[in-house]
Length: 119
Image 1 (cartoon, helix red, strand yellow):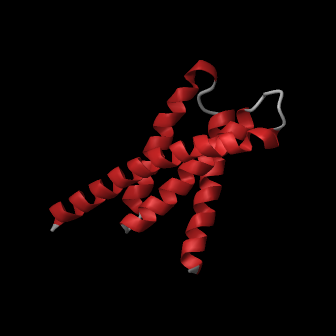
Image 2 (tube, rainbow, N blue to C red):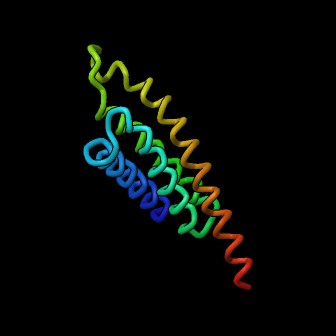
């Protein structure tokens, strides 16, 4: 149980840090969509590194949610209060979680295929 909690905390922190790095250092403005490529590579790599399907799904979903949720908060410049838009950001973050989970599963599939070829 403690191991799963550690995975959740580390994945959430990693996602938040990646969002902050992307927002302040990577692609911005009209090039911001290129961050999706970076995040997809991170998710596929995470899926490849983790040993089980379950951990790949869990970690990549949390990383994706944290990335999109944090990135949305950092970029918010609307006139409504931030609290009013958090539910919408959470819904959008679920889409991010689905995307990173899919890429994590691709990474896990590649891991399984390369391990089979090594035998």
